[in-house]
Image 1 (tube, rainbow, N blue to C red):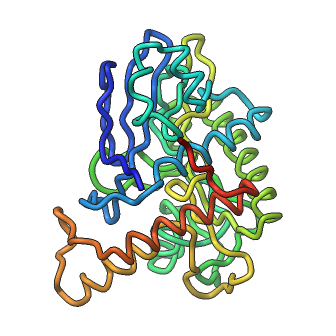
Image 2: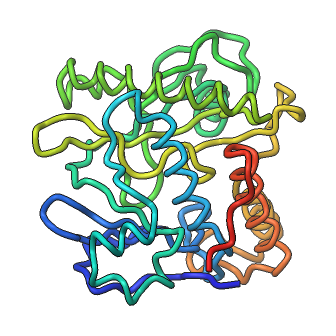
Length: 306
């Protein structure tokens, strides 16, 4: 099975993140390439997860096409043939592009993650358990881990290049960006989450929370960018196993996190880079989670591309 740990293309490399490379196509377009790298606890592991980049790209394309009526996006195409027609110099590099590349409009990213929380989990649960708050704002008393909120919460966060993002309030976003832009980010994020949540429920998946990114285009309009409702940007729970009052199984890199937690508890890994060697069974189980999430949400297995 072919894996890609890092792409190398005849375009200007603008950014190499934990998972993606961002290339400049021209003044108005970018190319995103999702590798099979995987990170956990802010550490990028040495071993790739087969087909992970394909799942992230193709699932994002599924959502961009399905939810595009809710507002402008940066998405142009994730079809490798179309990409190579648009950018002929990439034709000799199909092996790095197929299924894991996306041609997009260029935008200026908004400096906040637009997090939507439908259920109390993750960092929100940790803060609530300690202080009864979320981003220092009070929440109702008596909530349990994984309880649903009466209505989904817009819970933005700062973008952190290193370490964890920091939860902030909608008022913080309004102060930084202006009230009209902040209101539009909240409105669109809630609408996209609601549409994605409703579809996922028909497929047996609870989207507990997710994060969206937006960017402004050359005319100043807001566009949904980056990845959308993937296992890396969202918390997917199997609906038939949901039980509030505890943590939930999830369709993501949970096998990897469980393995690393065991090593931390045993004192065989200190939580810092480099990560430990991943057993083949952990790699395979993590890949299977991503592929199953794709199959359930789209209604078909991830194709095998030639």
